Length: 172
Image (cartoon, rainbow, N blue to C red; front, side, top):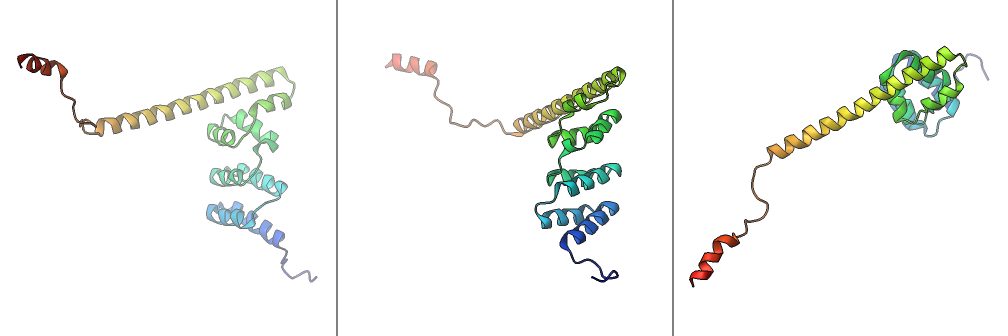
């Protein structure tokens, strides 16, 4: 093989294109790459996920998680999310199956660190709970608005009032 010749190996070309899409923050290009490649090697996905997290490219992180990147394989990243109390990433990783509770067992044994980690994790979980409640409230508001917007027409014709019919029957 000639050293000046570009590689025609499909995987090498894919890796180069993947790195370029991540470096440039190219969501459309990454989408095409991920959908065109099919099953991707797990180490490659994890490396790409780590790079996008380092550059704080949330759109690319979302794409990689949707295409099978395992959020639980990144121990230090999960701890960093809790450390920074990054709710956006926390919610995204939870939605894709991240187990932040398991990180407690893997965290350093320093009691101060453990207490701090638990406190941050509880705060993020409370925020997630509030987010779900806000979503429920918005859904209920929308439903109420739709109900108010409907005209007040009965769905079935009104039935005759039996009380008004009684005097007519007696009069006969």
